[in-house]
Length: 285
Image (cartoon, rainbow, N blue to C red; front, side):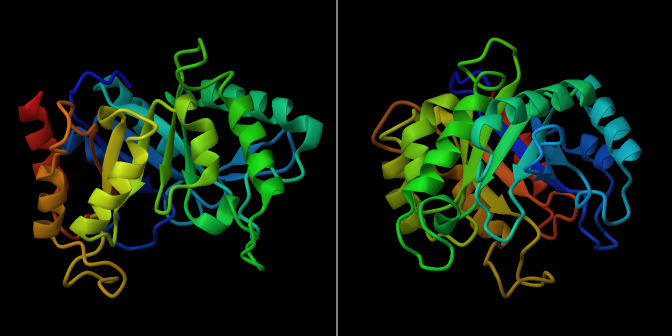
């Protein structure tokens, strides 16, 4: 991503989502996102497999259809990113990869090139995924070291330190992960999952992240599947008015603006807000 105070829009499309109203990927051309992150690709410890799409295609959308739709969106200017999540019980990137980590990273790159995608997104969801043991909640240096090695291996092929043109982003929630402090310079942009944040939460964590990266490399994320009348309204309080508040917010202590907005589960969009936000972002360019 070229960060020049030009806001961008990112949409996460959930291929595995089983809701009848979840629209196919090609339908997102109506919103004209800058980036579509296809969620999610699982990880394999086999360095010759690395990532696979079994869960992504476990519902009604087939892989061939997803690929075709992705390429059509690319022709209209949208970049397509593979969002990778370690979906295992331990949820720790790089665990037990050992010396195979470089082969693993190369396999990821080869697959992204084969699929003709524009890059990858690493989904670092929570504190116990990297910084703590998931059972004991104790600080886990081994997990951090494993994850750091994996991210550095990927950075040879993806992100601002590579020379391939393929991008690498990270999406994460609070708190600020130790692994992020050690790898922040390897990502093109950072997406914050602000799904259940209040404004004071946003300001607090924003001030932590800008210690490492510039404001225009940080994108705020809201979930558009949750609303007052949505099927999961018990989980998050993302009304369209609340999303609008986060969309309009800008840091006041610097000249640079935030990088843009991310909307999660844009295939369902119970808040009916994706089109509005995308259009508003275009008006700001």
